[in-house]
Length: 242
Image 1 (spheres, rainbow, N blue to C red):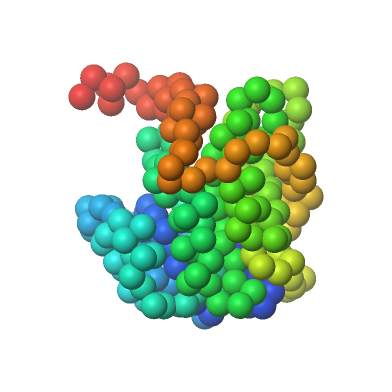
Image 2: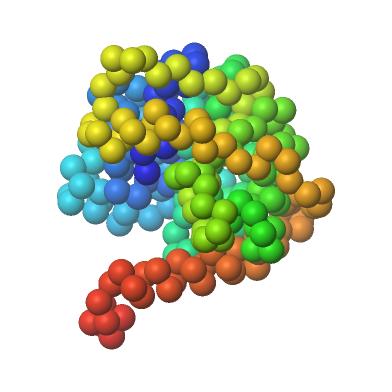
């Protein structure tokens, strides 16, 4: 997910990043060589083991094997950037995206720190209710929120996309030097292009997501179904039989 790697070009330059959701550890591996210390909180110890064993994940910071809400409640650490990337099984776990969780993230950010949320979904149309609820919730806590697609807009397709939100108490800007180093040409092309893929400047009025009122699982059903059908196309039938 190359757009997430753009965190290294945020101003001011981040020194300490927290990942909520580890996955393969690819993001940590991509940004650590640029002098960024990376901590991670991951609920499943097996995910941490597999990242180390098969994807050569080697953290420069600490890895906490616990639920993110527990970590946020008790940690006294401060971060320049928190990357919230917990998409799994077709949805973002609803208990990890409410105004209470976003407020807890804000508490552990340094001044001018940035929350980065990866949220697969729709940026328009009748299936975008979950996306609209998510960005309204972010804007309830943070005065500055920007959202980007992971590719150019194709208004005719109406297909889901990865949406990346950047939220902060101050304006979110990027500084990408002309001589910046990238892991490959695709990464460079994506990071230099994505500022033109900004979306969701305005969204319809509506509710925000709270612990008491959290319909996110229901609102994500369209993206969960799209994800399931995409996986059926991608993986051979033998995978599903076993």
